[in-house]
Length: 181
Picture 1 (spheres, rainbow, N blue to C red):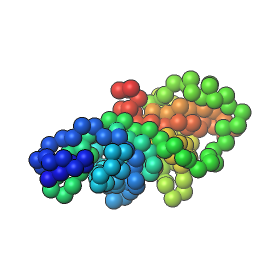
Picture 2 (cartoon, rainbow, N blue to C red; picture 1 turned 45 degrees about the horizontal axis):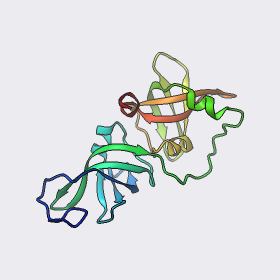
Picture 3 (spheres, one colour; picture 1 turned 30 degrees about the vertical axis):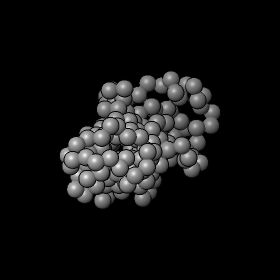
Picture 4 (cartoon, rainbow, N blue to C red; picture 1 turned 90 degrees about the vertical axis):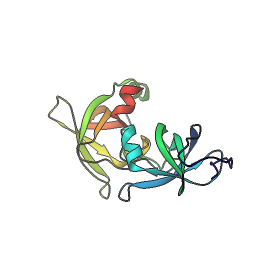
């Protein structure tokens, strides 16, 4: 069997960490594929590997660093080390006009739990721990944060701002990525 570099290897052995781009990921199917910068075949990315990182989804085009295992069925990610949002994002619908970008970046991440999120509608709500008011989550903010979907009850960290209509998530990350980072 050959690794993603074309070197002979035994099934079950791990390659060095790989950097690549998420080709596509479907949270309903529970998997997707990563294209390694070094070339070679696509690398399977299973939702369980993402969950171990603290996320249930990842945006297409997101940059990832993963550990890969060779199997009889091909290369599979066994650990996600980092996820960065896609470089090319569509223009945001969420209007942050009037908010100082430095102030947004300086806002602390707050622990929250997803109340519900409907990908088809493009929005949902979460609750910051210890606060009764809902925080609006928009699909564009998820994409800009490198996510493509959220599940009810999922733990996240959010930078929250107060707008004309109430609390709004300006950035969302996996909770584990924030406390480990």
